[in-house]
Image 1 (cartoon, helix red, strand yellow):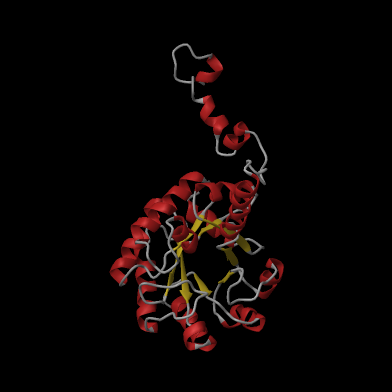
Image 2 (image 1 turned 60 degrees about the vertical axis):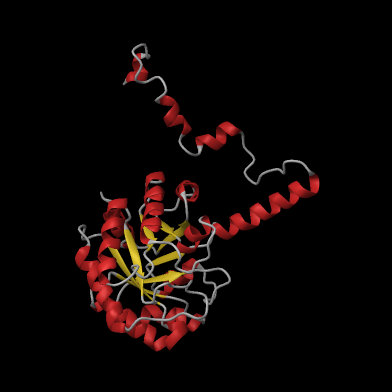
Length: 293
């Protein structure tokens, strides 16, 4: 099965799909090893890995290159942040083409102007509803694999109100989007209302410290959501772990005990050392018979 078809199969299952956020090969591997079935490439995390804020400063090619690194590091289907599509419908076409080449299973396209801002910051600006739906139609028409997931994200709640966000989500679904992503509902009542009022599958964005109240994943499933992404669940954990370790080093002048306290060998095994070691002598003429098989 292709990555998009595997993602579609997961979304068609009885349970809401939970996709933690990855921003590199390390976090992608950890998500897979933790037993999750899909992952999400966070735009904020990708920007942070460049030492930049989530202000739309990365290019499409930089974002796609990161998606390609993540898909190479894991067998899980990847949903990626496609930002605004990086321009007009022409740019959306190329964005979809490049993400398909990178092995991405699906992307979301939003209705902010370029450069965009994190969905949980103030000061966002939107394109018209017509421009937004034109981008969605372009994305849907461009994909080669009909299973490639096109998610329509609207940031209208924070700019034009909750009702407009619902109107835009439904307009995008009518334009061919596979799923709606209403960003930053601000109350639990609004969170629950999204799947009731949107006429199609819905995504919930779970951001710690953001505009949306925290929701138990089981409750979100009961509300009717089909997909939940947690963009910063590892990124913010890394911030805290790194700050604590560096502080301990400065204070004690000794290597602090890692949260993952394992040997060098065990560290490497988490990233495929055993498989690579099996290749060391496999192709030599004097390799044992079992190694050459």
